[in-house]
Amino acid sequence: KSESVKLQPGDTFAPALLEIVGFTAPTAESKQASTADADPIIEYRYTRNSYAVALLNGGAQTNDTLKFGATLPTPARDGHTFLGWFDVSGEKHVTMPAKALTLTARWSGELTAEDLLYTGSSEITITGLKNLAHTDIILPTYIGSGRVVAIAADAFKNCTSLKSITLPATL
Image (cartoon, rainbow, N blue to C red; front, side, top):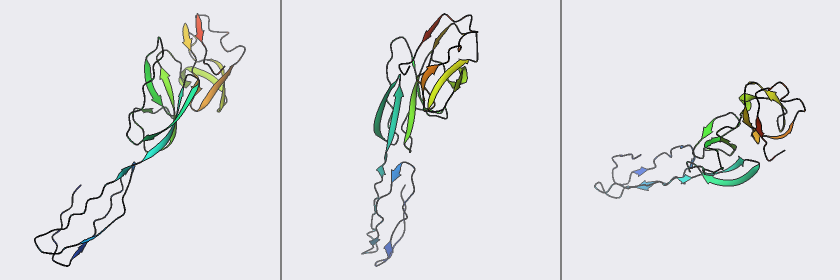
């Protein structure tokens, strides 16, 4: 953004700093015009902020600090397609937002909180499936920010179509 102001010799000009999400403003300064035909130029350079991020992926947690707007990494997992990084509210993130947060990797074939019955918030116990017609399921490592740590004894007793279950590393 640029701002033009007509100054007379001896006039002082101090442009306002902008508030920009994800950036820190520099220290404000002012300039004085020396002659009528030589307008002072003030250039502000904003600093891109860095934020802490915890990336949860298949039982592993990676803690990092990324600059606002940086592209999040794309992990690989044999036999699965990476669907993206999701926060506890279910919002998908492709780039680093202007806040510290925890993100969980989602993969094709992996069930989500919407597919499961469970108890707990920081330590999750799977108690069943909402759709009993599943044939092959992959249980997630995390639901929101809670780790899946147990499966109830009768969690799949009414799932007559179920052929295979891939368990998370957190069990």
